[in-house]
Image (cartoon, rainbow, N blue to C red):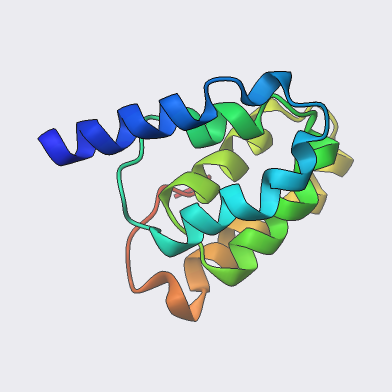
Length: 120
């Protein structure tokens, strides 16, 4: 438990001023790569990675999120997808994103982990 707390505190310290960075979209691949390398890790609920990414408008980070889900679905990137699905207001936008939960669930590297997906 102490190690998890130390990791979460370290991530918050690293990303503390992320919102002040002018071109923070350039950091998206690195932030999602952490999620991909640690798909089952408890890095916060939702934690500094998600909070930092979500300082950007959804259209700016959604393509990187889709890519991340195709590379390695995990707790945080699936959680982010679910948050977006819960927030979209038009059926067109929701329909466009609905294939992602199934793709994440069925991904060969998901390792049989039961991640919380919409409609399950």
